[in-house]
Amino acid sequence: MFARDPAHAIELIDRAFQEADVDTLVSLYDDAAVLISTELAPGREIRGKQALRDFYSRVLQPGAFSVTQIKTHVVEADGIALFTSLWSLSREGTQTKNFIATVVFRQQPDGGWKDLIDSSPAVLDH
Image (cartoon, rainbow, N blue to C red; front, side, top):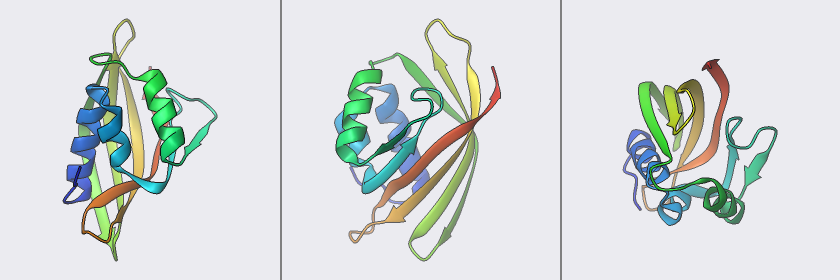
């Protein structure tokens, strides 16, 4: 999957996450990616594509989660982009939670953008 810019990458990541499309989701991460997810993997850093694949294969089910970007901001410099957002995560049987996400993207040699560091540690409300 080719993400033309960081905002497009987030759109593709969110869609793949909601559809539990693990192959597409993992393809949107850089080979050296790190995921920090306090909601789904408290206290863990998930590093590398194989660990991401294993993690997402365990936690995702089609239609189990709904992700909504509420407000986003991107700053880009020299092939690196910092994406910050206020977003919500809904899942069946639980109350919707809002998070602040911080994501670092790196532009790839083919011009596409991939997620290098993905962190959503700040829970805003429960």
